[in-house]
Image (cartoon, rainbow, N blue to C red):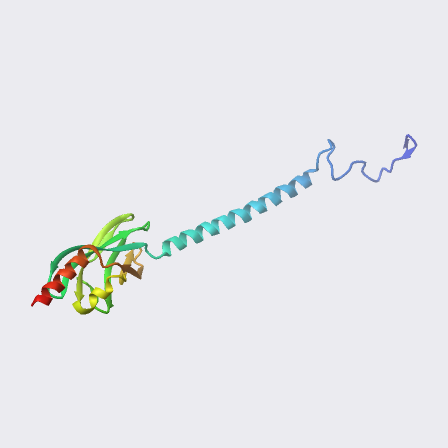
Amino acid sequence: MATNGQLIDLDQSQRDTSRGTDGLASPRWHHGLLVGVLLIGVVVGGLGGWLLGDHQQRRESAVVELVALAGRMSSRGTDQLAADLTLVNAGGRSVSVRVVDTETPGLTIADAGGQARIPPASMGSIPVLLRFDCATVVHRYNDPVPVRLSATVAGGRVSEVSYPVAINGDWREWIDRSCRLASRR
């Protein structure tokens, strides 16, 4: 059988196998595209989940964010003062904090047996004892004293952090008074 002078081979299909009868891509090509899009979605979703999980794990294991400040004074002695160390929890989790100890030439900040449970974005205070040597403590006023703190988060994880505390305000005033009184004796 011939059409317009061309022979038609009946053993071969007359349709283009890459195109449907309506000129659109064949269903086989659509399936390949769909599988490719799904694979890209799985890869992107998996990567996003991994990054989110990694971020949450880092946030949960992060060191507690604390700020320590010289607080109010409660009593004084010749070479020792009872005071409060004010703490600000700048982190996103509640924390229990206690002072470990700090010793620097002329000044010791020691734990007075207290502990503070501080909610996120809140303040609290811990009782401390300031022990000082009047001959050397005045040389410490310009340098913050590194105070070691033990911080426990809700999951029971304990971290030790060191935070510099400036000797100023009430602490400095009361130390100066105590030293003046001691020098008059």
